[in-house]
Amino acid sequence: MISARDVSEVDRIVREVAEQEIVSRFGRLVAGEIAEKAPGDLVTVADRAAEEALTARLTALLPGSTVVGEEAVSADPGVLKALDGPDPVWIVDPIDGTHNFVAGNPRFATLVALARQGELLASWTYAPELDLMATASAGGGARVDGRPVRVGAAPSTLRHLDVCASQPRWWTAEQQARFNALCGHGVSLCFLDTSGLEYVELAAGRRTAMVLTWEYPWDHAAGLLLHAEAGGVAVGADGAPFRLSGGNALPVVVAPDADCAARLHAALAGRAQPA
Image (spheres, rainbow, N blue to C red):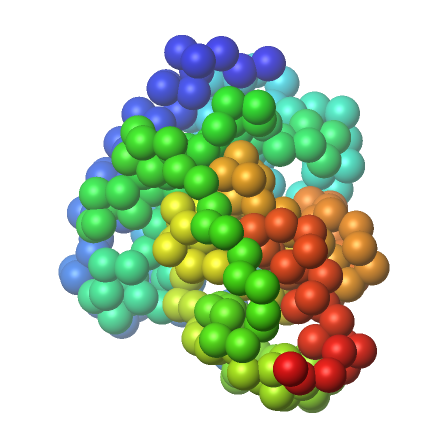
């Protein structure tokens, strides 16, 4: 469906669109160019312009494909149905970490993944201000800045295990209780500011695990393939792998192996006693 030449072409497209539509506006936004889709959920002219440009160029590269983008879904949730269809789908987050982008923080990225019928085929994570590009292809491995990466080994105990999660302000009461149970095992809990860059840390072995309390495909698709090709797993509370079309049993645990994921799920559910 997509050749090595096409993979390189997508790399070029992502870089060019980021430069033209995102970097050109970084640190230059004015009040009228920033809005809230929901309380605390920011969108800018750069998000919308980048998604429009990526949509046009990626569908031209792969005729018959469609795009499920964060901003398109915000305008029309029905766009998500394409994930269940027979055609190849580009899953796009034009700016992952818009809050950082607005604040002048360089920790933001453009996320692109290609999938068909729920199977991830290729992905690109590009942080232009950090000059970082992470790529993956199904069966072809994971690379960060062109170098192969591998997840780190899982420790034998949860004590001091580094676990990353979304900001507590986004948690439900039930999720808060689950994290309280997990922290009773002495894990080292930190909070992510951008999921795309956190997946890079996991795939490169610089972070061990992440707990997902939300399932928007544009936040996870690129990183999930990168992490899987680096040797890791992503497992829902029901033991099933992450499903792009939704309906995941949350939380989903992203970990180096199935055993580590199972131990974290047991701790989150209160089924395991602290060591």
